[in-house]
Image 1 (cartoon, rainbow, N blue to C red):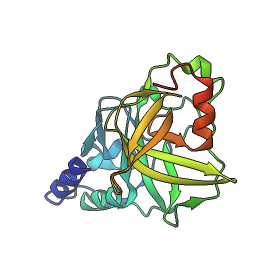
Image 2: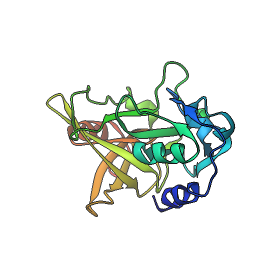
Image 3: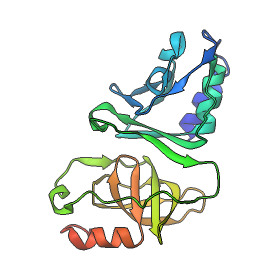
Amino acid sequence: MRALSLIAALGLLASPAFAGPVTLKANPVDDDGRVTLGDVFDGAGPAANFVLASRAGPSVVFEASQLQAIASRNGLQWANPNGLRRVVVREASLAPATGGNAVTATTAGPPALTRPAPTVVAPLQRQARAARVIARNDMIEVAYAVGGVTLTVTGRATRDAAAGENVPILNVASGRTIDAVAIGPGRAITGPEAQAARAQLPFASR
């Protein structure tokens, strides 16, 4: 977050080269580790090459309000019509092949959501040797599902993890560590869903 704050401050010095509305891409990805406005928005024009962040892991998470402010300082108008709180940009090779959506569909209301609980891809046994989907220090959205309602919180991964593997997540706001299970780039689960996942994996106790 400190790095993103620095980028936001540097954005104040940029002279907008393009003024006009842009649309958030349904599946924002980058393929070189440099996340630009053009990777995130359709119609960015001359501002497309403005670098938002350097991606160290498989994904990088932006607060929607911060992304909106940086875009505005570069002459781009994003209205955020869906009221998103976070936007995830993934490495191109890890993005869904078809119909994927890397935008975190979290609205600006209370943290309790009515969307379906996240499902661990089955069978989990086949993922035991999968490549990592979370890297240490990635910002991760952790979901807790109970009674058809999902609560989410964002924290920082304290280690690398493959899909289905344990990954402690540090809640930077409270300073507490959440015991979670990785389910994809930028995403993890905790609670009953995580317990069920651990029971199926040989390395769950590590």
